[in-house]
Image 1 (cartoon, rainbow, N blue to C red):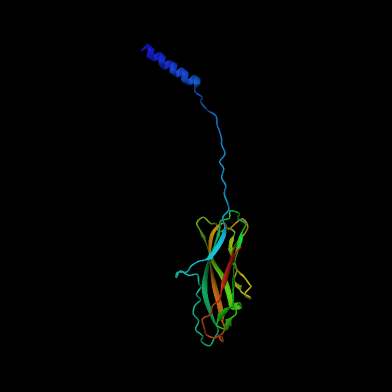
Image 2: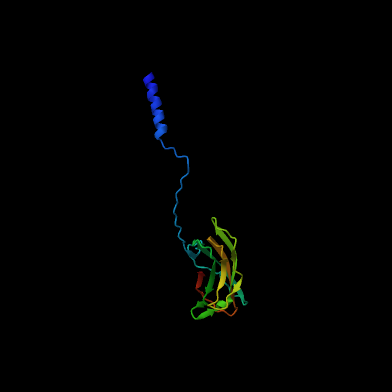
Length: 181
């Protein structure tokens, strides 16, 4: 029993003598690079799976008419810079063969913005109702001020087209261009 106690005492003495117990702090650096993403946008597909905007059908009855439709657009700002952006829309004249409805008969009324996920609406605004002047004119659908607009936002805008009572019947088509910058 004396030999056992002696060996045990020697082991405890040896451990405390040679063991390095670190009671201080040590630090290291974690390196992380975050690269900016992109500023993208698109026209949201309708229930039929297309991005075409169908205006309501017009029946000429001897008076002027107004037709309407809805365009939904999406902005995705994942650049990580919060410098702001603006989404605009322009449109060509409406053609049916050689018949024309001038684009200056089209008004754009931005109606709602819906943020997705954690996107913050602070500093993100709808454009104002705008009657397009010509094919080069642009209506602002929505915009973000500097310091805002990071994330994803969908805008719903109402389009209204004035149809003069003397407009020839036909299937009219125009091309809409949506731009974000």
